[in-house]
Amino acid sequence: MEDWEGYWEEDKFMKIVSGSSNKPLAEKIAKNLNTSLSGVEIFVFPDKERRIRILDKVLDSNCAVVQAADTPADQKYMELFFLVDGLKRSGAESVTAVIPYLGYQRQDHIFREGEAVSLQVIVETLEAVGVDKIITVDLHTIKIPELFKIPIIHLSALSIFAEKIKEIENNLRKIVLVSPDMGGIRRIKILSEMLGNCSYATINKDRDLSTGTVSAKEIEGEVDGKIAIIVDDMISTGNTILTAAKLLKEKGAEKIYVFATHGIFSDDAGKNLQNNLIGKVFVTDSVFISKEKCFEKLEVLTISTLIANNLK
Ligand code: R5P
Image 1 (cartoon, rainbow, N blue to C red):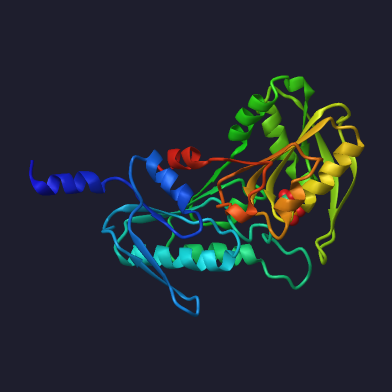
Image 2 (image 1 turned 120 degrees about the horizontal axis):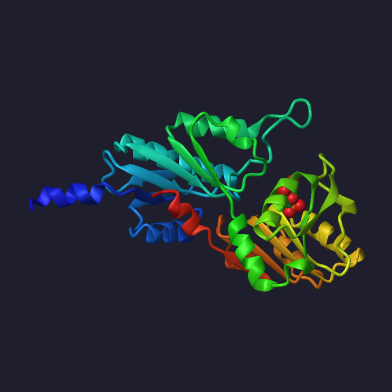
């Protein structure tokens, strides 16, 4: 066999590049695909500007960039835009942006007169820098993919949650899935089907749009004497979960577990969730959770196989 034949064989595989936001997840995805991460240099200047340089040959290759857009989302998006630009200028055939957590997704439409639609700006910039396809996980609403002109694969961690729920409680009749707001009903209906149509309940949540304060008074559904499993797309301040947990306890829930795809854990969320109300909090590794943000009751489930299977 000539030397160059091996070169082309190797080159057929997808090249995986990681931004700096969630390298452990990118490494796991690469391992799942029997490869290792391609070389990239991310140099940070004293004024915090970033210089990106693609170190591997990517000419005519299909590439994937893994970059979660969690806090600080602006910086992480800029890094992603530069990585995509670097890959395109180096001749990449295609670039898939794997954005396990799509920052700014809660600003997907105008809530009050005069507001910007920040997510639309992000979407248009991703398209403008040359992203060919997006892979993301558990978006805030199922309408968000409609904002993209390029193909988007919207994955869900619900099947991973279903497996974990069966592991922690085998008597599914004792379980009630709880959506902490009306917007999450679709999510818990799907999960309920995965768990043999177990019962579910919904909380009527109110959020003050200017202060962000969350309140909840009513639950639709029976929770008394049940093991309540709160399911949400993300935890930021933790106020939604805490408000739901307090109400569930008041209404007689025996035990409370929390499942959320994205563990953003802003401010003191971790500390506040480490309390007597909640048995355990499960999130995925869609964003990297630093040691400082970890807490005893937290367990992180990986979505690396889910993503890798969609890159094959
Ligand atoms: C809101 O509609 C979302 O589904 C989450 O419930 C919310 O974003 C969580 O935010 P926080 O943890 O700050 O209450």
